[in-house]
Image 1 (cartoon, protein in one colour):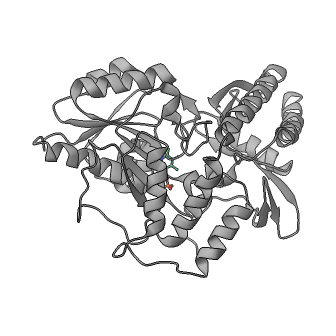
Image 2 (cartoon, protein in one colour; image 1 turned 180 degrees about the vertical axis):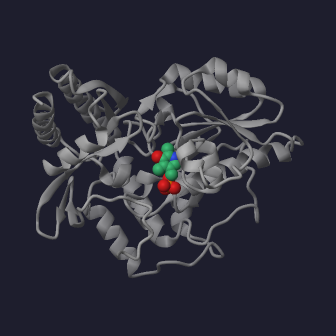
Length: 391
Ligand SMILES: *Cc1c(COP(=O)(O)O)cnc(C)c1O
């Protein structure tokens, strides 16, 4: 019997090392990693620039707490600000903590403006914002909330993609809108640029904050640093994490000047933005902010999308549609095809993917993949789909 709390149901695989887009078991079996630790290892495994940054920092200093200046934080914050809508950055260890910071920003913003009655956040159904008490309330999914009541107050839910419902849900107590530009866990579903533009207009009309959860879709995954950029608008707050540390635990809450309401003593964390995390985070930015890198992601992302479209055409009895953008893609399985069982089948074929809601298989490869990796993945999927279709 394992001493671990059984909160996960992992596959039997354990990996000993990784290189680029591949991971290896202790027995040396190789897998093509189109899961990337759930959108985390954005530069693949053992990227030499990240390894060097971590080793170099490990020999200097690991942790000092936020009682002292952390130069790596100042540098990384400046770079995120220079590359986005934001003016200020708070570093956390995880996505849920970045979202928690965003929720606190929303409440504090209206408190400071003399409207403490405005504290509610309108979120979407089928959302995922993390597993803390506030973020499961924000996500609003029964399967995450059940057994942990009373549900943290202050969250309303409307259908994703529906601007009329969103508008109707704004009341005198509403502080902010919180939406994933592309829903991840919910099934790789993006409502498109017009929806995000509409959300901006609604937030402006009611004087509330527009907050995006870019924990999964941010940090280059869609081919832009942040997914909201495709809509040509600017949010007030963005929470990001996953890819930002390339595998080292790190998250960030970004705000514009207007929403920069967290001051000395208002918020904090022991580990958040420690020197090790900042060394790796800055190294990740060195790569993804380099000239042409994100354009390359958009391009290879289109190639992955095209390849998946081809699969749907070829196996209409197995797959029904392709979703997503850039290197954040999903294919929806037909009724009767179980996405989790299919994921296991792909695993047996040597390809790692992640399941998502709505019977979707998620493809979240590292941003460094090339056409040859896509070809290899497609061959594995075709074999599995062919077996499924001939059943
Ligand atoms: C993963 C995820 C989170 C939670 O991040 P953790 O690091 O697991 O706390 C929040 N929002 C979205 C969209 C995510 O994909």
